[in-house]
Image (tube, rainbow, N blue to C red; front, side):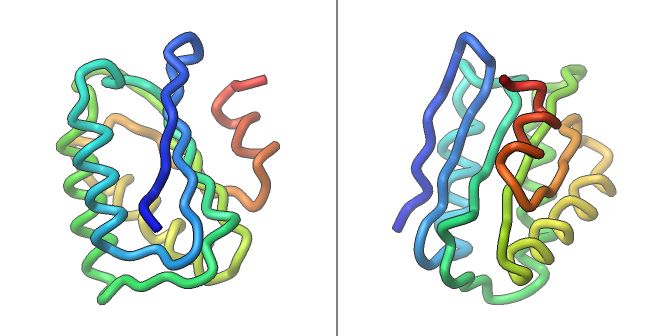
Length: 128
């Protein structure tokens, strides 16, 4: 099932929800389709992975490639935050790996945080 997202322009927040089996194709497609839009540049982001039942990523190299692609799509000179909510150990571990790779990217202007609960993620993003 594709990643569904909504845009809250008043809060400058993109919220994405992944469900079922999460594939590399869906993750890369979401990144390209959503973050190529001019109207969301510099927005904060929330990815809710609580309903993901299985992750189908062919290799760890996908996390590195996704972090690289994401960093190239960041709004230059604009700091924003990306919160990932992952309750399963597998999703949490992959999200932390992405966080690390993203931190290592020179072009990245988003701070990434990985959380177990939606409340923690909202607090990180400063969203009531």
